[in-house]
Image (cartoon, rainbow, N blue to C red; front, top):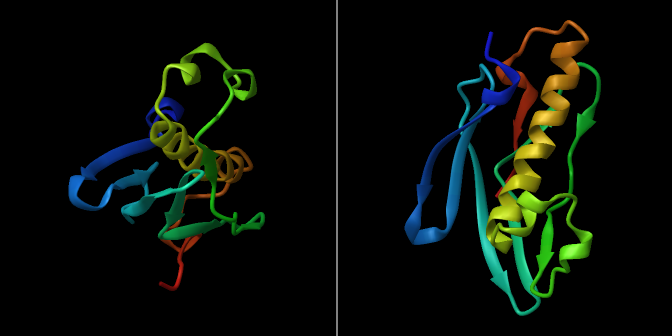
Length: 119
């Protein structure tokens, strides 16, 4: 079993399209996060959502405003990250929280937990 600190493995950053690909825990499926700059900040789109035996979690897209106040961030480490990095962290946390919740309740990880979103 993969240790909780190794739950998200960065597969690669695709430079030309500002995409990030990673794997979750023991799963082989590659999750892609695309980052788009908007006039007010950055938004991301994920390739999958997570649906564990406990529940389905089709979170909406995350948005980080250009004028993201440091008061809104939950710790000092996040204050040093770029807006894109904060966005990636939000997505990673979204997947990790629900994955670990199911593991902690005794469920065995399954590729079926990651549901591909239509493009």
